[in-house]
Length: 424
Image (cartoon, rainbow, N blue to C red; front, side, top):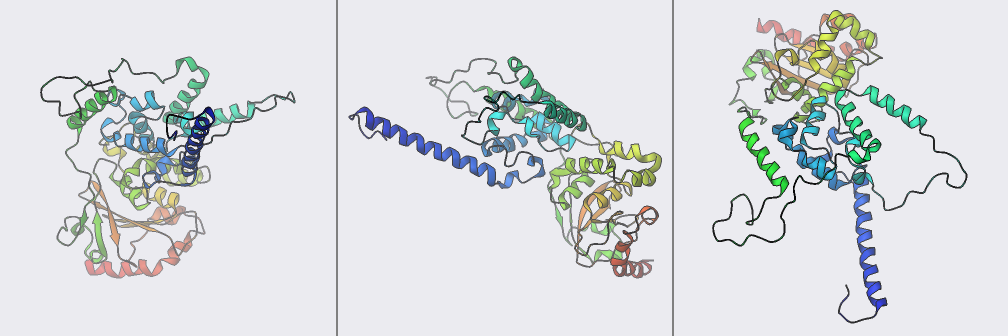
């Protein structure tokens, strides 16, 4: 922008000033995009607290780091925590803990650098009038929020508070040793295949290489790809009653890791199969909802604590049978939490209506299937398919207004009863 090497100070200053104004405009434009534009990779509820409050550059780095969670899990040694120590952003093992807990990434997990989406300087408060800034209300709210979080959320919030209370003990730190970055090594011979030039690898490349090695050792043999079954692959469809098979459009399989039932519900609800931990957490919150506490006390009785324990997991990987999704217990929670009709095709076939709301003509119907005596799959049905009967406990403990669900779907439930004797 200087143009040439001759000219006075005024021309140089004007050229530099124009360049700075251009950069400032670009920065402000990027801030506005972070406020109002959402990329497809960040529409998941997992980023709910960050959208519009964190720069898109930070969100992209977090999305890339999230890909490592599948093989890093919550192991800090495998993770290396490079993103946390170098950028102040949640690393793979930290994201793994949030996913296990089924909670979105908290805003406090992102360093304040990435949350400053303005070029304006904040004005000091009360400098001239002598008034004091009272933090009592803010501290009370902080304690209230801390007590309401689970152990994962408490650890994240505590680490953010420690950064403010102990600034000299911040987790941000330089690499453990000085890395040679200037120039290349002038040697004859074949260059290493892992790098584009013959040089000393950077610190993050050592970490990535170690992570990839551990991934190859710990990858499960079972694939997690979704499979749409057709008439040429009826291994799941033939396990459902004969009179309902003609209403099945296809069956979508999910990974069988002990979370399969929650994976199916997450997929049907729009979270995607990987949103299973969000479903576990939301069903846990439903179970302790103060507005329905009396209902669940009566419905589950002395099994209430066991139902709650089945929703809580400690790590990734395969889950034991006591952590699997079981019906009818989870059926009531799913229907009430998401206000949907849940249909289970298995042995037996059951319908779950919400227990505290009235009938809605535009309600979503989630259909799941139990196959192989140990696995849940998503079943996509044709419009107007017959509905199996409800449980006796639903009729016993549902509210008065919930009776309208039986009336609204009476025709489809009668259709099921007419088809059932043909099977016998």
